[in-house]
Length: 238
Image 1 (cartoon, rainbow, N blue to C red):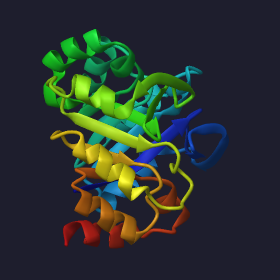
Image 2: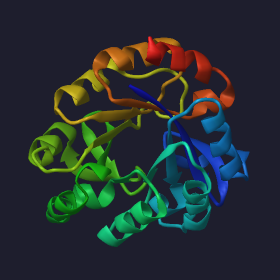
Image 3: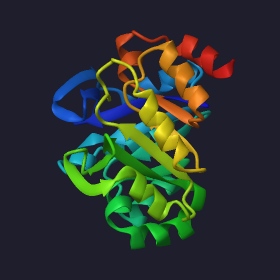
Image 4: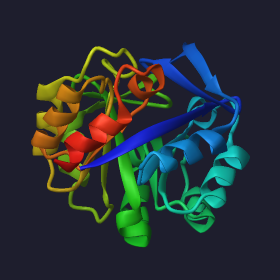
C-alpha cells in the first residue's frame, strides 16, 4: 500500500477543508512546490495534487500545480480536481503526471469514460466520492443521483486503472475512517482502490492496509501533526 500525502490548492495556497466545505478552509502554505519538495525529502513516493478551485468551478491552479509536477524529480504525482475532458487528461500526462483522476465527468458521462479508458488505460483513475452509498460530484456539492455500488458495477469492466474513493462524511474531520465503508468499496472491485477521508491514526493506516486498499491519501492529520508521516510509513512497510 502506498502512503500518499495530499496537496490541495485553493487560490494558490495549500489548504485543507473539512468535509469538502470551502468556508472551512485553513491555509497551510503559499508555496506548493516547497511543500511537495518537503514530502519527497521525507520519503513520499507519491503526492496527490488537488485543484479545489477547478473542482468548485471558481478558477484554476494549473500553473502552480504544473510547476510542482515539472519542478520535482524522484516522486510520482496524481492530479485531480476539475479535470473534465480528454484534452485536460492529456495535458496533465504531458506535463509529467503519472495518473489523472476524473470524478464528475466520469460519473455523469459513461460514454466518455468508455472512450477515455481505451485511450488512457491505467493512467486514468475514477473518483467516486460518496456520503454513505450516494455519489456526490462537482466538488462534493451536488448529488449524482447514483448509488456507489450500482455505479461501480456498471463501469468496472472498462479499462481505466482504478478508483479514488473518498468518504466525504469523515474527510478532514480527524475522527478516523469508516472501516466498514472501506471494506465495502474494496469488495466491489478487483481494481486498485486508493482511499481518502479521515485517516488520522496509525490504527487507521493498519486498517486500510488490511482492507486491501492500494493507497491511502492523508492530508489534515499530517499537516496538524496528529499523525507522524514517518511512523505511518513504517506501518505501511511492515
